[in-house]
Image 1: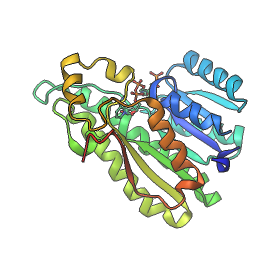
Image 2: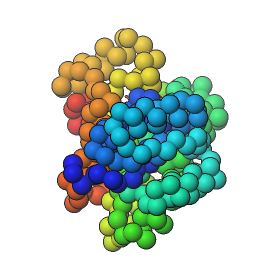
Image 3: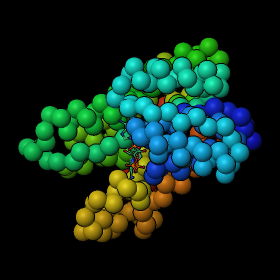
Length: 248
Ligand code: NAP
């Protein structure tokens, strides 16, 4: 992954879980990082820890991805600090699960605005600097649920399916400028988001995973680093499932 050294990446939702693992994985290859969360104290500590551990420059930014204004101001700060943006990882996401008959309009809007509109706004904000440089990598963290659907997650599945449409459209739009756009569709990855799932549902899920175990955040992070590096140079518009075989 030599080609990653001194590249600049923005990672949203980097305060914990999959986003934190993505940030650490990129840092280990020498990538400079702009790390995003809604909590300034947490993300400042994460950025400091990563900087000390891996010796890379980091910038902590408090941004609510639902706000395009905050995103535009944040991207400007990244450019002021690092002069370029090579890699954009749209990872921030939430769930507000419920069956459709009980789902409130706000549960729908919060999930769509965070998971899908947030990714759209960041893609839009980084496209101009990437187009200018005629190079860039965008990676959207979708979900197998966006491909398979899932009862009780119509808002989340719609947002994650939307990210796949966004990814493929931007891959077609931006390919000529050498900007690669891909999605990763994780299966069941152990994290805070999945802690809340009842044991019975977890056992049922496990029985449907051919590899027989849940994934780890590192499995997603490894895929992000691979796609970001020159090893992924001929990959765009793809949805890479990292799910132990759950969906096939
Ligand atoms: P997590 O532990 O709940 O972390 C979510 C991250 O998103 C946190 O860093 C959180 O930061 C950030 N975030 C939430 N709302 C935000 C907002 N409005 N603005 C900015 N940041 C926000 O979740 P995870 O399991 O690591 O999931 C990461 C991504 O992978 C999500 O997109 C999720 O849908 C996807 N995914 C996860 C799984 C899984 O099994 N875990 C499977 C498929 C897909 P703060 O709270 O600090 O703001």
